[in-house]
Image (cartoon, rainbow, N blue to C red; front, side):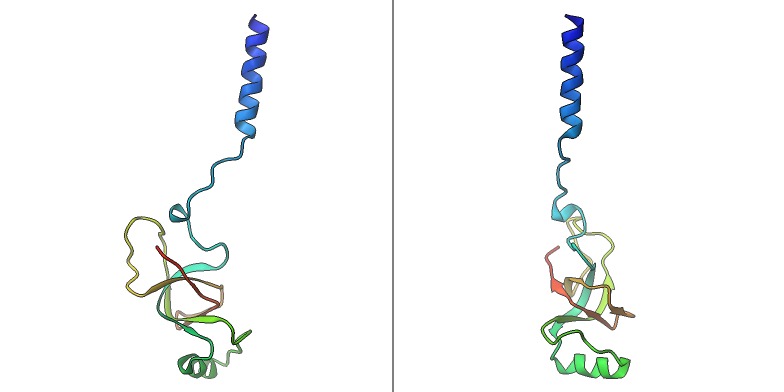
Length: 111
């Protein structure tokens, strides 16, 4: 009897520890699967005149004209707290950030 109880306990604990851990919801971790969460004053197309002026000044070549660019972006440190300090447009942007002036490859998100 003790043996079957011990074996049952061992098998149960093995299945419990082998079960996949629950996924965190998007609101409890960064919503960005790649890149970083930022708060931008605006998200515009790469063909926007402002982007053209900034890239000319910085000497930056965009990888494509089919991307969005974030202007005046700063990192969002906490996502999913129920409130947001982002008065602009929150977005996931690629790791190409030019001192907050411009971020390349941005996708708007909801906080």
